[in-house]
Length: 264
Image (cartoon, rainbow, N blue to C red; front, side, top):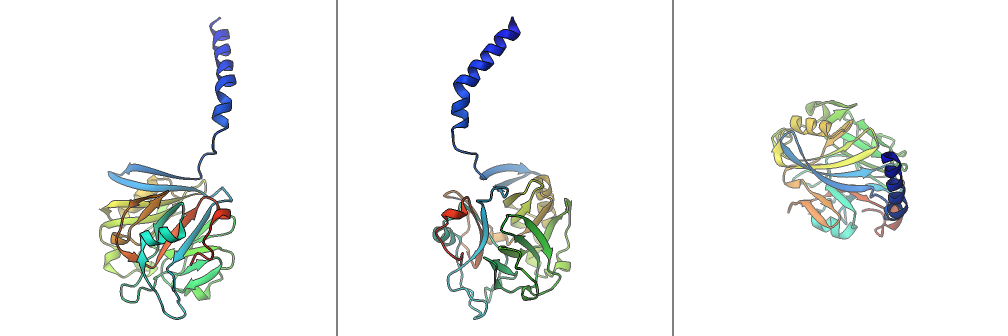
């Protein structure tokens, strides 16, 4: 009798409540979470790259021209106000004197900044991500045509699921890169989920590497950090900065509804 009663109750539940559960909005492909990992609070945005609607792209300031050596800066807030992404994180390093980004940047298949340092995070039209070591090669000497978006930063934190740190071997000589600092990073999980990550408390690159591994990343790359570290999600500046910068990384939930053309 008990089993029959349980079956009747289950059937009533499915009849009464299942339609309301399945008729709602689809689960979002871009979500935010805050976790404590290795005794540090971590803010992270999950991006489901399995959705063909998702668009991830670097973005530059208006008037930016590598050919003319013009590298204007603007605040992270201004980037967000102009491009109106679903989420955003600060991008790669830039020279404090010239403001030129250190790493190669490709937007909509166009090489817009020529660099030779770091690890290239490359995203194709199907949202498949690959990571390439530049090994000192100028971006102009590499065929970027398979990719819609490329941004080079570093050093590499995780490679094939294991912690890998070799900043000097990747061309990073600035002592500031090695110090404990606020951090930003981008990572990829085995399930094609891209992670935007910021750690507001000061951590070393080694600690950041293990944090990214604990978050499930099989590949991860350090981004510019310190006062440049910034994270935005759906109307909220989660990791705030007042520092001006030359480049950011944006993500949109629906590429068909983006109103800004060219991402530049």
